[in-house]
Length: 223
Image 1: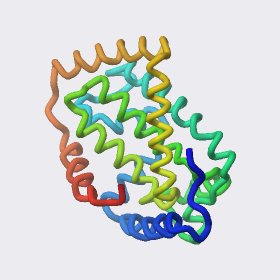
Image 2 (image 1 turned 90 degrees about the horizontal axis):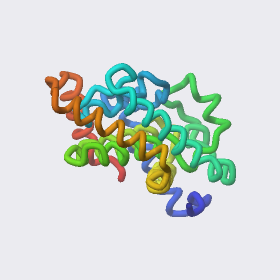
Image 3 (image 1 turned 60 degrees about the horizontal axis):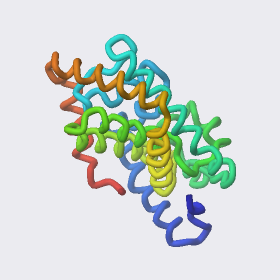
Image 4 (image 1 turned 180 degrees about the vertical axis):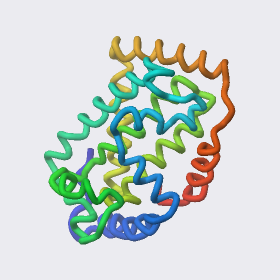
């Protein structure tokens, strides 16, 4: 990874401008989604991509896929920590003396490096893995992965450049996992689950239509 934007640089100015632009969505439906995306605890975290995949993801319905996402979360999150510990970048809500959409986590986040974003690496890694399981759903899955990443900037807990670096780490981690036998075995089992679940089919939940509309309405946010 490159170094995070330096003090006084145009890149940092762009990060600050993005902060003010994106945090305006707090208090809206998109802000509520951002708050929900902050939760990486299972079982709730498993369902984040259910609408985009068209399959209800849970420990009961799709145990292998559920475990695949848990393992990938660990891999992508831990892959960010050498850079986090090296740069110890101050988070935007701390530097700009602002609130976030997860106030209960602010004390912990203030002690954790901002660059790169672990949530961004996780969400993008999940999206890439799921597109391998359901290539025909790639557009929806990648849009949801990008939205999951952008949620961190909307919450005010990451800079835009943190998100971009996080997606890079997520991509690199998933690429590296392709050579891991345990990962490939879990992928095969999860692919079988997804194929069977999609063959049975289920009516789209009202929440899925609302999610799609919310993502579409905010699709012009920062890259």
